[in-house]
Amino acid sequence: MIRRVKAGADVKVSAVIPFFNDGAIIEEAVRSIRRQSRPVEEIVVIDDGSTDPFSLSVLDRLKEDVTDVVRQQNRGPGSARNLGVAHTDGEALLFLDSDDTVGDNHVELALAALADAPEDVGFVYPDLQFTGNESRLLVMPPYNLYLLLHRNYCGMGGLVDRAVFDAGFSFRSEQSVGHEDWDFFVRLGVNGIFGRPLHSSPLHYRRWGYSRSDGVHQSGLSAARHLHPELDVGGRLVQIKRVWAPALSVVVPMSAMLSVADQSCDDFEIVVRGETGVPRTRGRWVLMLEGDGLHALRDGTFVERVVRLASDRSPSVPIALHAGSAGWHPLVEPGAEPFGVVAEGHYYLDWRRGLDAVATDVAAFCAYLTVTAGSPDRWAYANGTPPAALVPLAQFRPPLPPPEPPNGPLETTASEVERGFRHHEALPLFMPATGIGRLPNPPGPSQDGLGAIVERAWSDWMPPRSLELHLLVDVFGRATLETAGSPRAASVRATAGGPARLCVGQIWELPFPGTACLSSAVDPSTDDITYKVTRELPSDAGDTVLGYVPVDFLPGRVELARSVEEWAAVVRGPQHVTLPRLLDLSPGAYVEPSRAPSYVETSDSPAAPSPGGGAPAHRGPDHRAMLRIRRRKGPGGIGP
Image 1 (cartoon, one colour):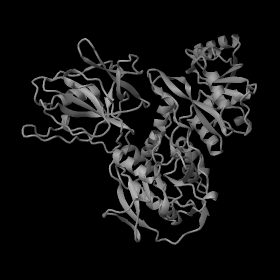
Image 2 (cartoon, rainbow, N blue to C red):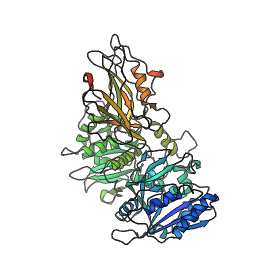
Image 3 (cartoon, one colour):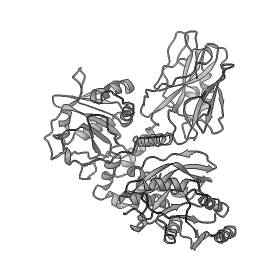
Image 4 (spheres, rainbow, N blue to C red):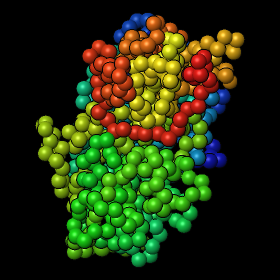
């Protein structure tokens, strides 16, 4: 593909709008294109066989207003978009559905992002600002082909380089398929044409309730493999996963003598660490090696052993690898410093982001993990397998560069989406380099076990970097809320020596799609504390952000106000509890059920049962964060 949108090039922009009986809203979409700070030279509306008289009259009015209208028999949006491409000649194409709109500088920003992208990028895709019967911002993740095989995050509304269509690509026109935009972007990715997110200008995406996409039941990886059988030929799916979402990233120091065996598990990447700094990785787990550990890579089963050790633990516990006498076995006796340590990828990311002038070796990473995740399990290993075919590191396959680090609030949120992705789609595929599967036996109809692995991961996964939201009640019955990055002992009795503390649920430390901001504010005249749940960050400098709560209901979530009331009812000591003032709950605010808390036992304060028979236990991994939110002191010395 030879890109036609490049920095400094004279570019014409064409807009294509597929249309079917949407006469009430099509003019709003057209107006949003005509308002662009960077003009769109050409607008074509493809009428996909509309039958509504009012809609047809609106099209006639648009045609009189210099908008090109092309009609065809009803064949679906994919066919309509293809016809629009044939009727335009712009180097950059904006595909906009007739019920969506874009901001005034959308084309200018998208064009700059596409022109600045590498040659293998053929399109940019925007975030979604839902309108209509929903109001929330959905931040899209960095481009990842393996993630794209599972769900569509590259929707319409960005810009596509015409070179994509010059290369012979088009939208599927079968009406029965559905998700033709997702299939289009998957085909581009499989053929080496990738995308780039556009966070500076979201698409205003109208939601009316049930839509055409909701009627398409087949989606995700099974649908991608059905529509693209080439993914199952020659280990192509394994190759895509290894490049874009490896189960394991092996970080090694720079060494001209290092060689790697043909591993039984090919689902890994090797990332070389320089003399200073720590490289970025893509793996679900990260293994750091040094010293004698580098020779372990000459064992053809080493990577698979490490991945199986890591994946057998829930929640995942870091593992320190020590030199042993033979084989693999748990290490009980104290030993020398480990030659390697493996931990979940988000721990590595947090450590990497927090590095300043500290050491970047295995010992330093072990020390960090001990503080944040507890002491690593210790295993002994000795290379007992004869070396297989060895490849010098200089000739080993280079990894794909990971996404750039976040630079702003939206980029940080997108990074959280990528972080969450590590916890499900990046789970291991136990396949050797030949592509012959050796996956676990699935409990369901799946023949390769992948569906079972992903389904189990989804059911066990909780958003990373979660915080516990605690209700504190002093002996006078005054209640406040605070957050903690790790589990805290709970007490149901308020005494002069300390308040009652109860965990009402888990919230998130950073914004994530489908969340709203939970903040507190202190009235300086009365010291009263008010808590707010708002879509936007608080504008008052005196407000303190506690975290982010889900505003989308899912089974198992508990309403924040109800959870606070139920836990306040079990507090002992004060005659009456004054509940925290919770305002602006109109979006709906929920908390994730937390683990059953451990209570501080006293002679007159027995362990209290959970309200309503007990909060469901959180089954996901226990992600501990180092961040402790500092709060302004409130009444009675208890801060929000």
